[in-house]
Amino acid sequence: MFEKTGIPSKEMIMEKFPPIERINEGPVAVVECYQKIPCNPCQTACKFNAIIVGEDINNIPEFYPNKCTGCALCLSKCPGLSIIVVDGSKSKDRVEVRLPYEFLPLPEEGQIVKGLDREGEYITDVKVIKVLNPKSFDRTPIITIEVDRRFLYTIRNISVEA
Amino acid sequence: MKQADLVIIGGGPAGLCAALSALKSGSNVLIIERNKDLGGQLRKQTHMFFGSEKQHASLRGIDIPEILLSQLKEYEDKVEILTDSTAVGLYEDGVITVLKKEEDYFKIKPKVTLVATGAFEKALAFPNNDLPGIYGAGAVQTLMNVHGVKPGNKVLMVGAGNIGLIVSYQLMQAGVEVKAILDAAPRIGGYLVHASKVRRMGVPILTSHTVKEAIGKNELEKAIVCQVDEKFMPIEGTEKEFDVDVMCISVGLTPLNELLAMRGCEMKYIPQLGGLVPLRDENYETTVENIFVAGDATGVEEASAAMVEGYLAGLCAAAKIGYKPENFEERRTDYMKQLKDLRSGPAGGHILSGIGQVLIGGKNV
Ligand SMILES: Cc1cc2nc3c(=O)[nH]c(=O)nc-3n(C[C@H](O)[C@H](O)[C@H](O)COP(=O)(O)OP(=O)(O)OC[C@H]3O[C@@H](n4cnc5c(N)ncnc54)[C@H](O)[C@@H]3O)c2cc1C
Image (cartoon, rainbow over all chains, first blue to last red):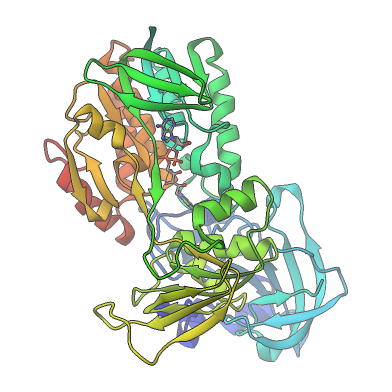
């Protein structure tokens, strides 16, 4: 179905998520790259060797959650915007999620915006914690949101009303 | 008549890299580009490129020409650039005729010519496909990303290849609503990361769908689409209506290389490469001696491959007229390896099967 709709299945998503214990320890990336394409900037971006594409740049990146520091530098480097960072260490009932967002207007810190799933459907309101847009991110801002833990595996996008 | 060492027709990524490569070997270079600016397709690509670092992956397409042009600057006294100039003919005696700004018409006689003219868009036949509001994806990108003009407000994107997916995303970034993306194929043709990107913005992707007709009096008002079966035949009763003022057609590209056909280079129709392409050897020399080719003009692929082909063809074209550096073999092997790497995945498979049919001497790069 994924190849017909662009929506990954639940199983595909779960396979890419690090174990919940790791998520609860602190920020960690989720590398949602499902297809062999000639591309490797994620590997170049990662200073900790947590993402390895290897000799053949068509390989699907291998991700090592225990090497990942959750620095999120790879988020704005992935041309497919396929990487997010999740952090379950902050609270028992909420998680923080960092995602790339290339639309205007950018949300403001503290703003409540709509949280969307992988189909673009509204699932819940989320609070914007941080908006990072330094020059080094090259016009791919990274937004940190706080989300109800129930939506850890479904939240993937936000919608900001003008 | 103007004389020159190496003339490169087309100043896109392939042409610019070919120029850099030949300059590095010591040749003089003249670039002919019909647009006002160099950079070709890259000037319209506001998204990040995939590929590897050597081909500037992760940078945005629009920023790559800058990098190549600043490298060209280092060879200022050896390179001449003619913009607003179209090569209109390539003759048996090697003469190129050029039209500058539709007023100045002149001839150039180079020692060797490299054609890097890129590709042009395919059209789609359906009733009323000439209504205002129906654009090719290239026109939409030029309006939006080069001139800052919104093409309309509600768009139906036809074609779910990389171009259709990426232009949909760029339309949304410009504040335009994309109602749906459709494709007659049963699967999304573009990279799935790009598909997921637009999907999570709420845009449905309708595979196995085609345009039945466009409706409108003076301009596009509605699009009727329908489902197709495995043989791409419309299924009756599956019609859907979309209220849109723009239909954006992105159903693929075809190599632009009439100049080569005119010159007498042997051409072959290769579906995997997008249409009619010249036969060529490993060094990207065609069946006519001293006529080289690189980039989308050899077969529709990616800017990453176009750049490396440019470096390789530029190196070999310069060597052909006596500028053969000591590290020639080393550079040649490096470029060939980069091309091999880019094409080694599933997406490269069909490109390789196409190349196998046009490669003189049979060895694959
Ligand atoms: C929407 C879209 C997204 C893309 N995304 C990516 C991506 O993410 N990664 C990637 O690697 N590639 C991407 N590409 C593909 C990439 O842009 C092309 O493969 C690449 O530009 C081809 O380079 P080229 O130099 O062969 O041709 P072009 O870029 O088309 O350049 C050809 C040049 O020749 C000039 N010319 C043509 N005829 C003449 C003539 N008779 N006289 C003088 N000048 C002439 C043209 O004006 C043009 O400047 C994308 C393409 C599109 C349309």
